[in-house]
Structures are given as C-alpha cells and as structure tokens.
Image: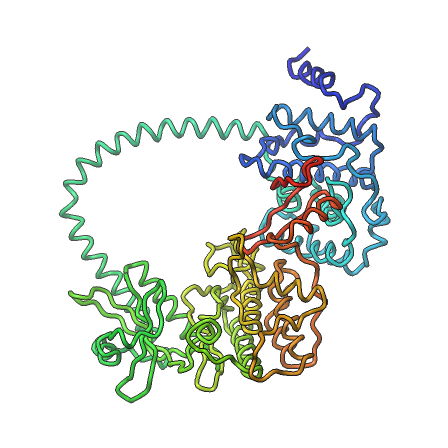
Length: 621
C-alpha cells in the first residue's frame, strides 16, 4: 500500500465533515492529475480562494462537456466532492483547508443560475445571435492574448445582458456559467487545454513532471552561471583597466553615430514635410534665452516656453531635459507622430531643433502653435477663476472627441494617445480644443485586437485593463476621454483621496448618481450659462459609459462623436462592480447574498468573499 494512499485514507477518517455513507462524486478531479502545476497555490495567500474556485469551475466544465448538465449535486455528493478535491490540495499545502479557509458552504450550489440546469436550457435562454458570436470568437485556440481577448469580450457581453441574476451559493456566480459553457461546449480543445484553462479560468496549467524538469534545469544552470560568473569577474577586472582607454574612443564614436542617425532621420522627415528646422540661436532669441518668465508649463520631460519667431508669430517651445540616446529616440518618436497628423483638433507642429553645445549639452526642442487659453486643466483646477459656460464645455467636449476620432480612424497607421488628460487638452483663443503631447503615443498596427506594452499614463485616467494587464486598445483612450469629460462637466478631479485616505474615482461617483436617477447632479453648480437639461444629461451618460471599467461596455470614439452631435441615443449602460470605497453596508449585503463580490478601484479590481459567520471580516481573494 503506497504512502500517498495511506495519507488519503487517514484524511478521510480525520475530517469530521466526511461521511463513509456519502454518495460518489460525479466530478472527475483526475483530469487535474496530469496538469498539477495549478495545485502549487500562488505565493500570495490572498489569491488562494479564487484559485480554488477557478479550479472547481474547470472541473464543472468537464462535467458539462460529458453529461450536458451543469453540476447540481445532492448534499451527500457535495461532501464526497469536497473530500476528493481536498485530497488533491492537501498534498501541496496541508495547512490550507479549502472550505474553512474560504468560507465555502458544503452544499456548493443549491439551485441552477436563473433555473438553468442543462446545456439545452442555457442555449434556449440565450438568443442565437449571441451564442453565434461566442462560437465565432471562442471556438479556436485561446493561447494567444488576441484570441483570448475576443472570446472574453463576447462572454462578458453575454453575461452582462442575460446572466445578471443573483449569485448561487458562494462558489459560482451566474457570470461563471458563460465561461463554464464556453470551455465545455464551444471551444474545440476543451477545458483542460492549457490555453483554454488560462484564458477562461485564469489558470496556468502545466504538467508536474515538466515543472520538476524545469527546476532541475534551473538548478544546473544556476551552478554553471555561478562558476562562469566568478571567472568573468576575475577576467573582467583585468580587461576593465585595459579597456578604459578604448572605451573613451568608442564613446565618442557612438555619440557621433547616434547623433548622425537622429539627424539623418529628422532630415528626411524635414524634407518630406513643411517642418522648419530651427537653429539653437533662433530658439534662444525666441525665448529670451529661456527666460523663466517665459515658462508656461512644466512636466517630467522638461519645460514649455512661449516665444516669438522672427516672423512675429507666437509659438510654444517644448524643451526636453536630460537628453541622451534614449531621450533622442523619444524626441524623434514624438516629432514623427505629430508630423504625421493634421487636424483642427490636434496641436500643429511648426518645427524642431536639435543641437549639441559644450556648455549646454544635447538640446532637443519641439516648436508648436501657441494656445493662448492654456489647458483645460488651467480652467478647471488652475488659476483661471471664471467658470466655463455650457456652450464652451460642449465645444471642448466635441473638439476633443473629434481629435481622438481622427487619431483612431483618420491616421494611417492608427495612433493611440495613451495620455489623454485635462492638462493635455489645449485651448486656442476661441476655446477650440486641441489634443497635445504625443510623447507616449503608439502607432497601432492594422488588424491587431490589442497591444501588450509597458504601462504608461497618469493615475486616474488609465483604463483598468491597461493598468492591470498592459493590454492597449483604442478603447483605452476612450476610458481616459470619459474621465476628462466627467471633469469638464463636474469641475471635479478624476481621482482624489477621500476622508479615509483612499482613492476615490470620479467615474464611480458619477455612476452612482446615474444609477439612482440623478445624472444632472453631476453638472457643476454655478455655471454661468447652462444648456437644455436633456442635452446635459446625455453628455453625462456618454461620459459614464466611456469611463466604464469593462472594455466591452465602452463605445468607440466615432460612436461618441455621433452621440454628442446628433440625436443618436446613448446605449444602456451595463452594471459595473461596486467601487472599492463603497459603503460597508452595501459590501456586506452583496457578500451575504452572493457569497463574494467584485470591487473596482482606480488601480484595478479586487474580489472579496464572506468569511464564515463574521460579517465584520473581509478576506481579499
């Protein structure tokens, strides 16, 4: 008799809630035996319960695939299943009790979600066009981010529209039914495929034998690296002294080469456009030798000065600081982006300057048209004390939307701005909005569903899916636009700290007012000239749907423009997670009814579960 079998037997007799008379469990936990990588619970204990819940959904999906039924066990079968499942987890963490630690109820699921118990009932309940969309997007390998994203979007739409009923027990929710169904019935590879498991159940599955083999390889490689590293240090010390002189020579050569490459690229850009290449002396004269009194803006990149060119035209000059090879790349990128676009609602580039002097080092300067009314941030939160009228706010909202629409649909290739915020919306003498600062902008290749890139932008304006996963799409800009529009309508900042020192998102506040039928309460008091109530309400609804935390719920920018300038109605706004700073009573009520609740904050999502009988305790899952 093997040791592992003895352990399982001892466990069976040692746990008081297991009974020898329990009925057999119809779930096949053995499907996890060949992919036991998931049993190594994440290092963060706060994620253990969600990890366990996801594993159960995967096994339930296998049951649906085999039987055509969603798993609805009798109490005795539930006990047997808990026993079987605990036997697996106990091998890897003997101190983690999957029921006691997570507050899971023994009965698992007492009834089907919205009385849906079989595959046939599910397919009858959900309209055929919606199911067809799910089949189109989920019936293939989900191992790649793009294919996974398409499938998740389809399932999110299905859940929001048709599975909005109450959660069942504290193991599954109605939303989980869509993923269980897709993995079991739609996806041709099934729930145990690594791509399907990772995409639909957030689980990285790989064979335990593979894990052990990788561990052995890593240990062997580490030993080799240590020996080589020691030899490298000894040899490097000798080579370092010998190479100092050579490095000096090479450094001068590299600087010259980088400068030549940058200048060559900018020269070709200059030849293909109407851009002016200014001399450094021209720039110094225009800014009165960078007089501090000419500074009109400051940022992490450097300062912005106003200046006057020899022809008498007023311009804004953005001077990059700490220029280096990396800085040259950033500078060339921004010049390339701005030079490639022309639109009334985008800041126009007049020219640029590159120079290197002995006293001032590398100089990289962009010359743009001057916006005499400053930025939207100045008028909402800065020194401009006069409040904007409603017609002016309308003009700014529409102008910004049109500028973004051009970037997303008029530019080739598509450009994603990545840093839409009030301080990057500039206003000319007629209060026409101009989108500015393309330092973080990305060219978006045609045919891609999203880009995976490093996270950049400003807290409070960054879309949740981008902040959490680095997945960038045009709708990341839509989220940022929604926050800016709310700031424009309310006069409040997109992200502030509440009295408890917690971040409070303007979009959550606005959503709560819309949800309770008070959208006009979002509008700033004391506006010198207001608009028609139904028009102002429509703008609020557009701002709320644009700033929705779930990507699928947001419109595209061309749809936003149509809604703002025509009679096109705003679509129904899907439910959204409770804000992280929601009242404790609301959170407790949701957890008591549902067993768990997903909360949203400006920095991402968190899930909370009911902990036993203690309503005053919340465990992050």
